[in-house]
Image (cartoon, rainbow, N blue to C red; front, top):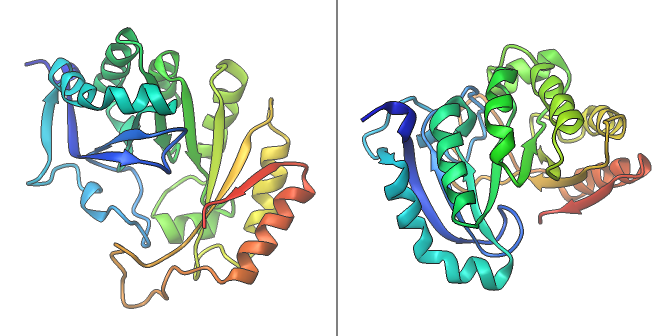
Length: 245
């Protein structure tokens, strides 16, 4: 089977309420372009995992459609997350195309650390985006995520907002020992306010559930004061803000 017609999936999670509107089924793909030390899905980061399964696109669509009655009644649909699902652009686009052909809402969650060409190939078959922005300071971004270019997610976000109509929600994980209590909310707020069209901002307070912590890092919990300050900062840029407590 051509790999362009197979999506490498770590797991499928049903009845998700935080991955877009309504009741959703979330597909967590295998592999990631970043190595965030607070990651809640560390098993999705390697390019291969014993639990991962390479799904034929039609078979995956049929499996997910078992939940369609919940999507229709709640205004939900399918969300593809990771890992980083955009490192598999061709099978991801094929899967999203098939779900759209079947009449279902399609959401993609990404951290944006992939080539712009990957966005260009997938964007036409996405109905909404959840877009993580973790930090803008190059040194902090590199240290926290092992990413090489803090500006790459910003460039891709600018392209997305300028060239596609789908709604975008910018999600900011507020992580103790990384960006909580720093200038990052100010930098991110200014950047988002300068985008081509309005976006909502969601603050995701860090917590330690499911984390693969390294001994040299503090826990990822963000204190309440830092969360409230970040919320106030985003409001100061006239942004719509939601805290996912």
